[in-house]
Length: 492
Image (cartoon, rainbow, N blue to C red; front, top):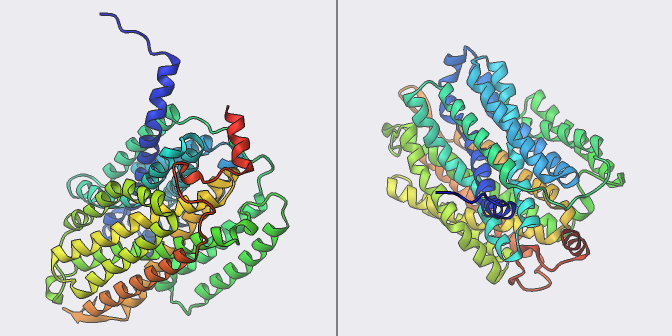
């Protein structure tokens, strides 16, 4: 039997059909890579011969690197090619995983985890590629799926890592992410084509350095404030440094002909309000998994805890990821029918409703799972709407950088949530066998705080100006402006 060779046209067709799932796989892998280290944290001081404070940097380094590199790589993608920068981000993530698999030296592990932080740019770069390459009628659902991969990967990463840690050497976890990263990199190289949409000019190096310095000071103060003391000289100096550096950075950006971030565009309501909503939604989303994981693992003797293992905790959170995967096309259809701002507002309200359920009852496992699932449903709607709002509000040549800033705002929201929840739980504890553990009212207060933030996100969503034309088959790219028409002419 003879097989006909695959023509270049057939190969191009296969690659086009695989673009969305391959990019979604990269987004899920990014979130998995960020999450897998969590089950290891209690044991890593013993395994690496280092202090708990040093081990905490395995999370902090990834957070800082991701926050700094996301807007920088987004801008680089707009200028030099989104596919090229996407492959670089996936490559750095894979190299970081491999280094983690090869060492037990805490210094090398921290540096490797910083390399993995580059993968945070995968989602905004992928969303921009989807806008450039897909027909308008497919863009909405693809962007919604891409945005939901953050939650899907986070929900998958915890039980996966817990299982590997429980039944194998802890390095096996990083070997697994290295193999998955290599597969994702190879698939992206084969299927994703380079977008013709570019933003020519010179890269704003000083803007990148200034933003990096300001974000490092800000996020380091937020993430380490609980350990170092919010009134300590180090934390106050970091906050002051962030304020001064970011103020000087804003001045430099406004004076630069080709800035890293177009602050004039970002100051408009159609961009500024989605960015504010992203920060608030990031806060409300992160409280769901963060507080739930601690609550169900609390000892039974506390009167409310379930004493679950890390593996069981991960399985409790697993439905949240499946919900985000299944409901992402539903949220896209809601945006098409009623507008992305309505989808964002509905999502924020659902998140608040989920937290009301958690406040009413956080003792029964099935109620905990249902409440967390409602929050995840709202997160799906909110996260799928945010990139659509950004895509409608910015020119084609700035989609990657603008979405990078939006993802950065989510990251800042998650960091603030972590600090706020820690502060609440620290001030609401009781003694149990000589150990201070959080009380149930403390957890309920954290849920109430997250619910209030979700309602503020709803208000921000409703304040976003309506689209000049109703959502229709033209999809999230919206009504073509001059930049879009030029890009389409170039493609033909």
